[in-house]
View 1: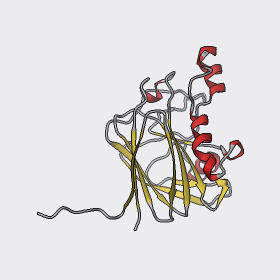
View 2: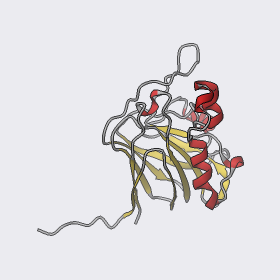
View 3: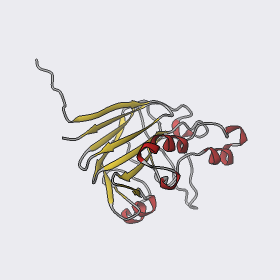
View 4: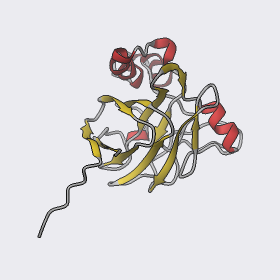
Length: 207
């Protein structure tokens, strides 16, 4: 019996709990994000690889698709209304893009002064984005893959227990050359990670 080698796999890596990654994807590539243990929020920013000021916009994506949540078929648009990527597959079923990413400042406001020095997604974004010229000015809206943030009837947001589970995944297809900046959220103070951040796997494929 001959083993089959998938020679289209160009990225296959595990991002530890609370760590991050910066990936380069050519147009047409797919990126699968696998929630290895379930109930893990994966904060993600998308950029045009040739101009990091052309970045993902939650406002434009939500308005143009006429839906608050993201799932299969969602077109992920930039601040210039360029299509950056499309969600091509999704076994979780719903992802948040309006809850934002955690920062040390927001942790203090939401959870108290004792959380000021806890690590947060914003710090991960700055650390991994720096080699690509992504600084504070380029940190915009993000996607919270696998994170459950129901919108209440009065418009308020609720950080709720996750909808994901071990092995569930979401897959993006790049519509142009992309930079994908990931913070595998270290948040301990709300149920977005089940109070226990865990690793995720990233699988990138292109010919």
